[in-house]
Image 1 (tube, one colour):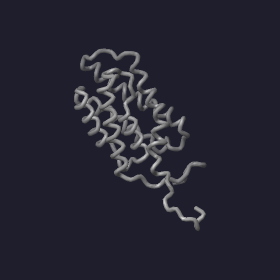
Image 2 (cartoon, one colour):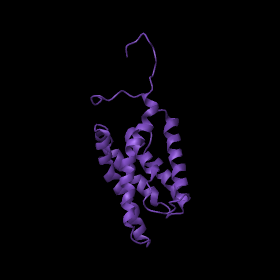
Image 3 (cartoon, helix red, strand yellow):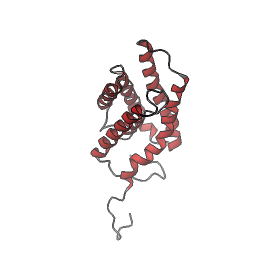
Image 4 (spheres, rainbow, N blue to C red):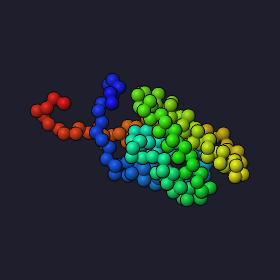
Amino acid sequence: MIMPAGQPLLLPVKPWFIWFSLLLALLLEMMLGMGLSGRAAWPPDLLAVALLFWVVHEPRRLGIGSCFVFGVALDVHQGALLGQHALAFSALAYLGLQVHRRLLWFALPTQALHVLPLLLAAHALQWLVRLLTGSGWPDWSALLAPLVEAVLWLPANWLLLAPQRRPHDPDDSRPL
């Protein structure tokens, strides 16, 4: 694959790092749910951002099935309707797989703009499931979560790609 101009070549990602980052995002999501925000609608879904990131960057290592499993785990932890997050994360993974080749050609701010509709669709799917089960209409502050998640795409990109940017074989006698 030809890389966009000015983008450095990255080393292959270690599979353990993908799963470690996803488990860490799941734990952070669980701690945020138990913290001060509680059941508020505005906090970002860190697990959704991490899942979408790895689906876009490593589509062969993470797919719809693993996103479904993480969604069920989050549903069980939050005591939410079983399958609510699983359905949203599966749809998010599907949409991420549809745009992953095109998305990586854009600069990071443009990527965040392209990711925003995907995150909005995942949240809208969760809101629809809640409406169908009689939980009521979401508050206007629920629209902040996808916006914050799209902004979090930038630091997530820097943080999760950092281990791949290290020099692969330092050697003073080679120019590359």
